[in-house]
Image (cartoon, rainbow, N blue to C red; front, side, top):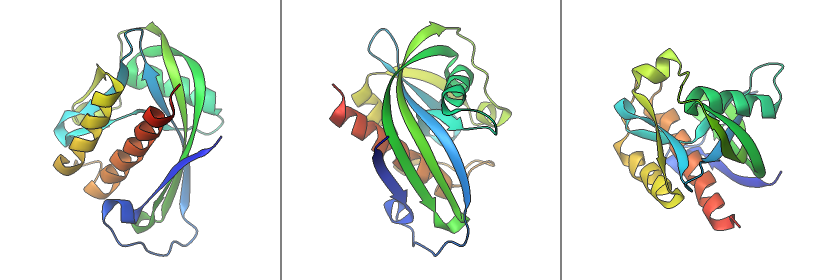
Length: 177
């Protein structure tokens, strides 16, 4: 897979610090498309956050298994992966943390209409929304300056999520066939 981009503290207006043996996380993200040409976003209303569908890979899980699980949880959909888009790296130096997210393009194979959100996601007002890709990018970009911290996530980490997803979606729009 090809590197889409790297997100660092400077992307969110923060000072970069030296990291010492940072904790690492592997994750998966998806550009999830339905039959109407729309893509899925998870909107966390109480944080004013729009994000791509995806999350961390659990121990013993393959990237493909994690992707299918995350999409079923956050979008209620069974999927067919149609392309590997690439990967994106995050260096959150304040938290001594790095994350590599592998990004896929997928289509809905079956919509169960049942989300399986975490308690945290429910408390943050998470809802699934569908829109065209340009509108999705606009929602993600516009949410950046309107973010509200939650008891689960401060603005530092949420800004990383927004910048990461903005870079992923911009790359997808630029490179889609």
